[in-house]
Image (cartoon, rainbow, N blue to C red; front, side):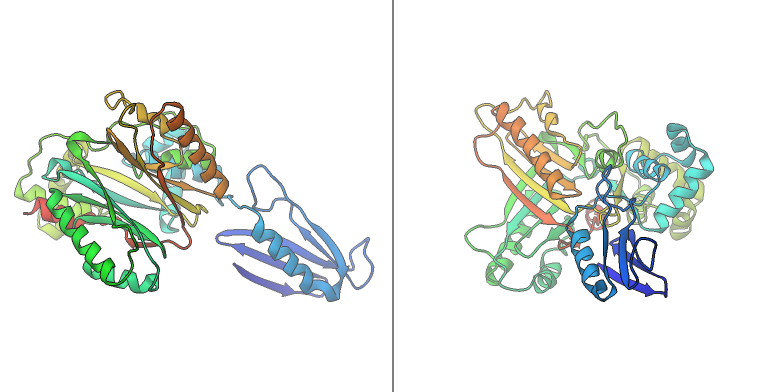
Length: 430
């Protein structure tokens, strides 16, 4: 937290910064109702605290105790849960719309939310420039030779600093083309991969276990892998943040469920299409004109191929919001083995009942699933977890204790940040 005060003869203004959220308090001397030499500390009634709850504080004391008052207020402010997002209602709608409809243009979003197209365009530009979101093109590699998605999760004995561990793993493990996302804390971590077959995943896991074991990072448990072959698994959410944004912004999200993200269809690409495909994965926001110049082909050719990839669902667009700017604080990782005697009906998609708004990732097979959720505070995490566990128990869907790990987002290190290009090139250009 950053602190600063600007002293004047009559008034002192203290600006208080908590991440991107500003509150203000005023120290006034010799104001009506106070004796000379007294200081009044007033916090604006519109301070950025919990939604729909207003906090105001008034202290008055001798000026000599000014420092003590500031310290008290710092502690009070720090202890209060802050989930306020410094965006206007229009900005919230546009950010939600970008996440919900990532391929929609400004005109389409304007029509959906009853706004002017110029307003949507200006807001989109500002949100992007200020880093409120990032855009990724996700290759549907299940149609181009990939047989599975894998999730690896590990507990660590923190005998060496996390920075040193990451330095070693980035070179030996995260460098693998198959891994597209990896995060870690001092004592735990997980990664996600796309792979042509289990042999590729097995090789990575052998290197991971050998490396961690030689460093003394493993205690009694090996790294655990959860395999989701595309033919026999379903992914209901793949880093879909629209339901989460709808909840924290107070926007109604009519369709929070989606069908299997990785639907399988036969696909073939020409050599030219393969090159354009890889460039779109590498530069998801680059205009067709720029890609055309890179490859020495026409803009119209690139535009036609891009439309084909989107319409045929060879590429899907993913929007990831900035966790810090939205004051999202907790990530929860779930691995849940299901009861083999009374599992949910896979064909009827019964596990969709568990799709809480704050779940951004959910992949399942018949007898196990992995979910990832993100929350603004511990209370939200606890409510989400309780709701999931209640439904699992009520339906007798679990017989073993699920593994649930929480990550503090301000301490978690993103080791590999959504890099789909290496595995795309490995499979597409092979």
